[in-house]
Length: 119
Image (cartoon, rainbow, N blue to C red; front, side, top):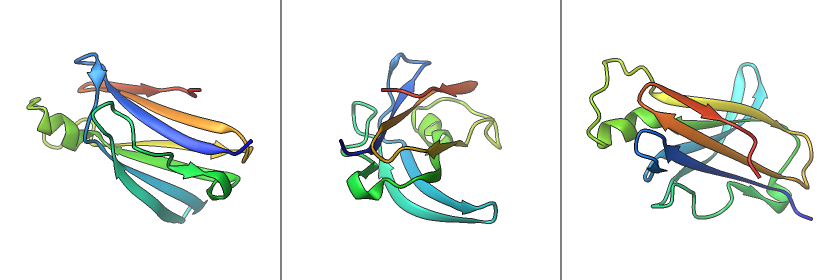
């Protein structure tokens, strides 16, 4: 079995996948140091086209997904405050088993967001 990391984004205000959201994957090396591993955009299904990490790329450690929700909401024509209440949404998580599938979804709306450990 080979590990992998995937994500998707749903727009709760529309009940639809959130397309064209910029997502950055960071490896947290210490409290003061992190390394950008990948930048992707969600597709028309709110997913990225391939796993963010797969196989030997998956290593034990702390990671962060940064979702550019503010840019997405502005592009949808939603009136948001300046500065936006939600702009860049971080989800920090740990990978403890390199052979597992870690799925990190984001459910976003203009006034809030949530996540969970998906399958």
